[in-house]
Image (tube, rainbow over all chains, first blue to last red; front, side, top):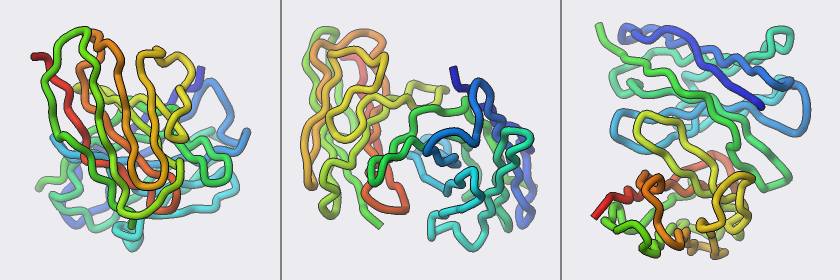
Length: 122
Length: 107
């Protein structure tokens, strides 16, 4: 059974960089036609896709966040990471990592991490 | 970006009721529409992909239909564990966007 587990700083100061890692177990990040995504959810609000990466290193980002986001992959550790720079209080959210299962335009998130809450505050 | 809307934003229902949630896309997305269930404090769970395909392990009381811009999620015979928030998500293009959610509460 594939499992994803987020880790990283839970409290980040305004203007600093949020850094999170998603460890994948029960399967290889390099197998199959999958992408690896970050999705966030502000408290009491809906879901926002941040971006994804393929095991090749190819990325795609949400244009609303593109200037501040970097997603990277470490195949040797079977994990991928998120960096979000110049954070503000609006970036306070639960951050989830998820696997994107793809077949041409068919794309759905079939495995999710439990989420990690990141608070932006001084 | 493709905007997704859902109606209603919340509903109250009883165990055993048939519940229908609607999702609408701002442009055609053909059948590239997925549905998720989220319980408080938990990650979303995939229920339906490609508008009507049931994800493995999901009870058959959940069904999806629709194409183009209008879609529905139906729960035939609400169970106590189905009280949750439901989100639709389009995969026709990037960025992947979600609807605002429909909260199903106990009457």
